[in-house]
Image (cartoon, rainbow, N blue to C red; front, side):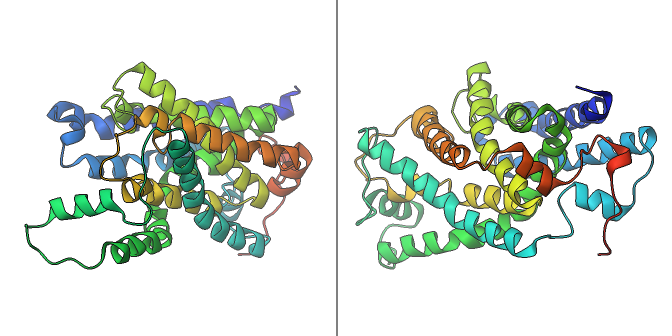
Length: 327
């Protein structure tokens, strides 16, 4: 590996340390309050934590400005995959496709969970969902047909993807906008795996409270790292395919909006499966992710020549950055 093809480890290190340190700083009140997952402000702090990778990008860019010279705003926006959208049609339609694909992937995982006998689902009567709704309102409260409420929940997923997008952007600007291209000199697959692993480790302040897997220990963190490597490869593929961060933003937002599908379809008398196995980031979903990744790999979607052409010149080479077209 020549000097010109090496990753900018200084800026990558600054990004990683800043993002992880700030994630712990933002989550610190949850630890000090000692309420764990029962903390009423859990969602607030978790949402705030999602913006720490973007602050890590700011820190990395400041370092790059000192070591590589200042770059124009248009070049920075292009390198981070924010603007311009070129080709615009590919970026827009990939964003639409991933909003549809995210709930379908989770639904496929639920089908496998049901086929394995880990849980029982009721996609017709929505009995588990009905029981949850009835428990949440005063006894005797008239309710619309449960199928209508379920349909509204499903129809709201694309809306949820858009609502979640600003928070997902806070993360994706760091992981897929900055880190993945910064690691690209290592090769496509190492860049995808390493960026996904750091993304998973970054979640540790919440995972160690029991978030996602109900495993508040190093095993839970390891589970999250593996899950984020799998999911991160798919999100990274959208970055490689479009040279834009926006499809990853909307895919991330749609996945978060779809994570509760299991609660919508589960039967009232079903056993509660372990989130380690059957959760939206559990082992079953790893298999779903792996199958999709395999299809993309077999069809050549991760070839380095394709990603190089779409992401542009090596970001570690200051002499290879052309002027960006006017915005």
